[in-house]
Length: 86
Image 1 (cartoon, rainbow, N blue to C red):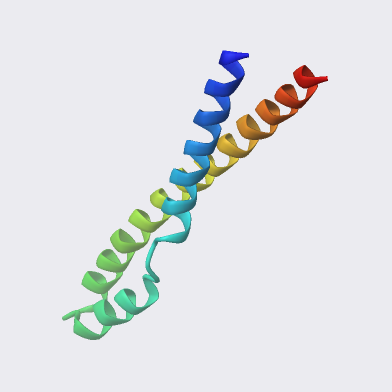
Image 2 (tube, one colour):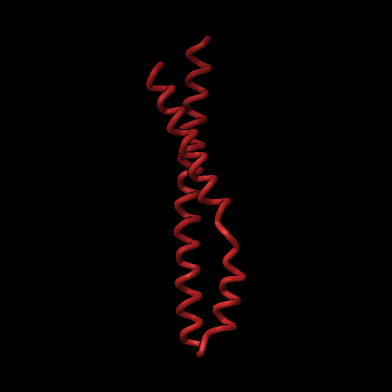
């Protein structure tokens, strides 16, 4: 029973962290527009925009992975807790 509660806590914590990483990221479109407007040439603008987008992709990927992991662990833990109560 204690292992299930620990897994439930881990699942909920993963959901919270994943949700924060996924939904708290700012909109990088405005940053990309500013970069494009202030760049001295097209090559420099493309490199800076690419770097900006890569950091967003990494954060979203990690956030979604934690959301999926947390949802799975939480669902299994809740089902096992309800099953053990009967």
